[in-house]
Structures are given as structure tokens and as C-alpha cells.
Amino acid sequence: MGYRYILAAYHREIGFIGTLLLLGLLIYLIVKLFRNYRIFTDTYLKAFVFFAGLALVHAVTESLGEPIFNSSPQNVFVFVIVGIAMSLISEEKERRRNGAREDSV
Image (tube, rainbow, N blue to C red; front, top):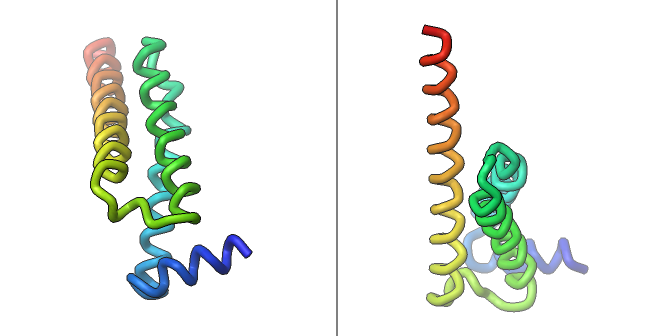
């Protein structure tokens, strides 16, 4: 029931290709957050990125019952948190890349 409900709910608003793109984007973000939270040495940053992944999983799960991605307080909270986490991941990777270059020079 769940799989059919997801496709039926999103298909009415954005079509089949839009549904696949939206689910692909959300799955990509979730996987990226959970794969990269381990790169941090600071436990607070690690916990924040992990929390962002859990918030996104919760939002996707909750959207099975009601459309939360088009109500302002919830989608703003979720995507601001995910955006900050993605920025932290990018900054940490860049810092490590630059640290490796300076060590080799």
C-alpha cells in the first residue's frame, strides 16, 4: 500500500517523472548526509549532520500521511537544517583537501 500511495499522491501534483525526480533528490540527500556525517571530529557537528539526516527521513515519512513539503514552517525548518549540514560537509571536505595539499608541499 505504501509504495502505491506515494506514487499516487505525488503523481497527481507533479506527474510521474516529477515524482521520480523528487524521490531521487530526497534519497540522494539522505544518503549523502548519512555517509558523510562520520568525517567530522567534532561531536557537535557530527550530531548536527546526523540530526539533519534524521529530520529529512522524518519529513519524507510524515509526507506519506499529509503533504508537509508545501506547508511553510515544516519545509523551511527541514531544508534550512539540511542546507546547513550540506554546507558543513562541503566545508569539511574542502578543509581536508587543502590540509592534504599543504602537507604534501
